[in-house]
Image (cartoon, rainbow, N blue to C red; front, side):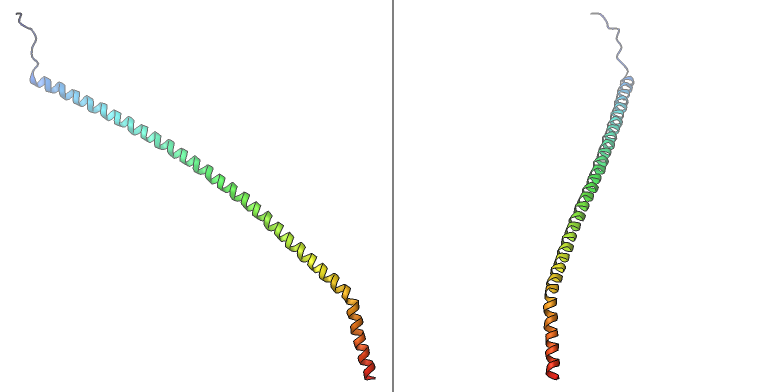
Length: 122
């Protein structure tokens, strides 16, 4: 058998090599952690932006719907007001026509009563 020229590494060198590997793995892990944190921040920022966009659209939709309902309600109130006013005018006009139609008859009756009372007192 041939003697091997290989030297067994010194125990200190093995420990140093293992330490370098551990430190290298730690740096890789820290880098991966930083990358994951950066990705998480980007996802959160994107989510916040989307939430704000959705909120703004919702607020705009609510404002638009509120305006539409307000206009619709105002039209309804105006229509009701016009109906009530028209009915009041029609009622007043009808009452006036009835009163005018009875005026002559009532005047004749009152004059007749006054005339009868005068003739009785004379």
